[in-house]
Image (cartoon, rainbow, N blue to C red; front, top):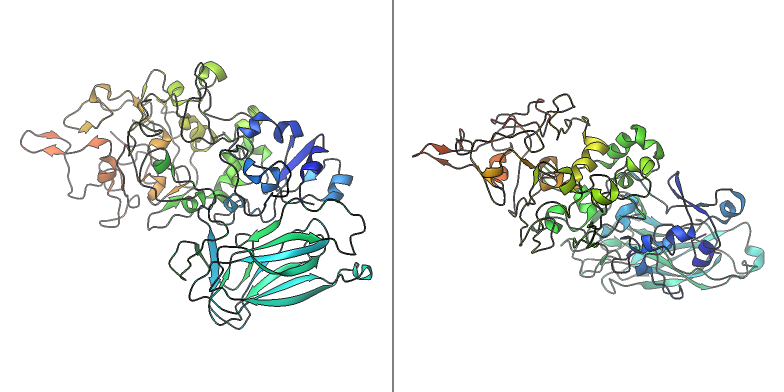
Length: 585
């Protein structure tokens, strides 16, 4: 049964389950607690725009405040009544390690997608199957993206329960009716297909086939409570929100093409049901002030381009489960939870120091290894003077110099535009977040990252970390502002100064905006001209690598297409061709 406010409040202690991961919460912990209202999933200024729940019938509360029903779709009364744990079920089709169908992408898919199929004979279908929480009559609506090359007779077949009298209640008999619609018009809105009885559970569904005279578009179906049926013999409150299934969780037979709603083909003019959802530009755009390449987390995990790269969610989950600190994870645990806490992660932009006395910023990050050792603690939201841990880059860089790079618009990272903070007091310590969680060891061909001065640690100490860089200038080039040659050898960088956390159109998650310079590209690590990586241009964002042939000063370039750190450049990886950080300087 879908979670309702009254049902949730009656439980003094509730166990929330993601896949088969379980952790304990109480109503006070989540439903009404300030800590959740401060969360990006509970903060009314951010909200949750999940298309599969609308809460207009929820008295005194709107979905935008982040109700539990956005993510916790189903509530099984049998489990609630009979199971000692009182398990609340996470939404269906979680796909915890999928790069395309991960549950988090139901919200974090930016402008949304729709799917289409050319006209056929009816053998290719899209099926939307809800989990209904109450036997009743429901108004069934369809949403599509219209256009001039759409079918005028797109066939939706509604499979519903035959419940004309109480004698028809059990066993449930499923019958169907086909409704044909004109998808050249009325796009971008809910269109009523009819009103039908549905039994609780998953026996009812809607199917769209390609038996049409032009392209058919599969976007979303909504079930809205209308009235009780003779089969409902104990009258209770109707469902407090609608049931919506979109194309992200629909079932497809044959290959359907799924595209962003703004794509030219096949000529859509109205948006997908997901449009207006959460837009997340990549780190280099949001915190670096650069030109955005992506408008969603989904796009970042699925970048396009010859050398595009992203974290592999399956590998992330597999690696975490293999660590001693990963004992809280199972095969059903969403991989995103390694770095984010779904209940506590905060809206972290625009960046602002919210405690004028002690400092600290809002953060969306947590370390996976903190789930057991520091449960409920986010990472990078308070300085060491408060937490006792080096959560901020300014704390980690003690004894060294952390210099925030320029933003692409104005001021310094992580912003907002015009920010004058340069020392990392407003930036989470991503060095520890990345290395202590995962990258202190070699992972799937990526060499270990060693930001220490200890050559005995895995990986080679890097001049971008605490290892000393060559202090000479002139014959080795110069540093560009805001970096100064007078401090050469003392600088330490944050992982996010160079890398995207989710994905990039560049190799090895390298950003396309660095130190205020946008449009940076790299090829792959290695290879030959012109397919290899022209790292020279990317490194020029921070390093002045020009050479004065008259004075003999500057950085000597051996090849016209200087290759810097790839397999034939000067700064060869000391750990071999697979490493990314142990450059020789």
